[in-house]
Amino acid sequence: MGWIRRNWTAAEADEWTKEDVLAIIISPLAYVALTLGVALSLLLRWEGFVTLGIGIVLTALLHWIIDPKLKAISEEYERRQKEYLQQLEKTVRWEV
Image (cartoon, rainbow, N blue to C red; front, side):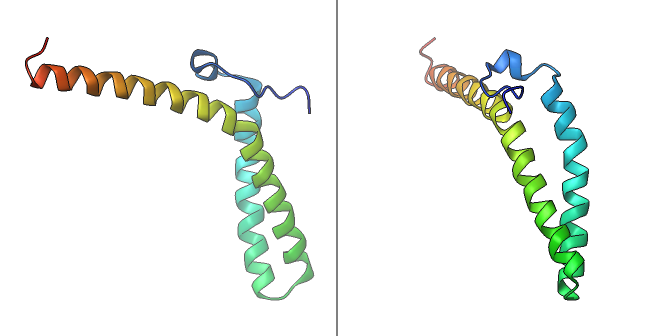
């Protein structure tokens, strides 16, 4: 899957891309497949086990697609939060 981008900067990850569209499509499919798969598996139906497997695969695919974008945004947020807390600490101690 070379057409799925895996390296992002925070600014790039904040933009709307095809990876977001794929996540929007896969997410409800995975949720429904997992829900139906668990319910049917509890009834010991073979269709439930197949559906549950499909749901697990879709969930893993969703995570593989969207996680790099979320990590890039999260790292930028954590960096900004750290800078803010350092500045706040200086202000509280009257060091500014």
